[in-house]
Image 1 (cartoon, helix red, strand yellow):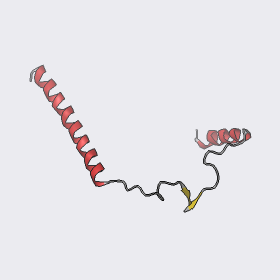
Image 2 (cartoon, rainbow, N blue to C red; image 1 turned 135 degrees about the horizontal axis):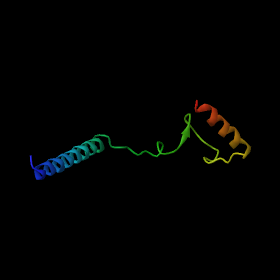
Image 3 (tube, helix red, strand yellow; image 1 turned 60 degrees about the horizontal axis):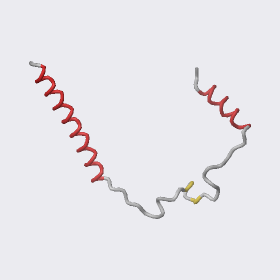
Image 4 (cartoon, rainbow, N blue to C red; image 1 turned 90 degrees about the vertical axis):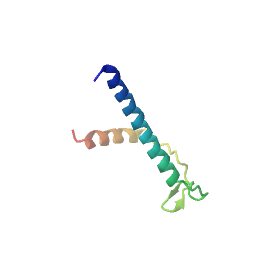
Length: 76
């Protein structure tokens, strides 16, 4: 097998793989269309709307506890 044939085979394999991936992506997009409804796009907690702001600021003293938790949770 010459080097040109090997490169041709490699390029064909890459193009075939890309085509297969793109066809699967197109199939998934066509079969699984998302239905946007106003009630589904709103963030909720246990079926109820949240009254508190989403980004809550925590006091700095809790960061030390969080770091200690992460250090001992990693199971070194």
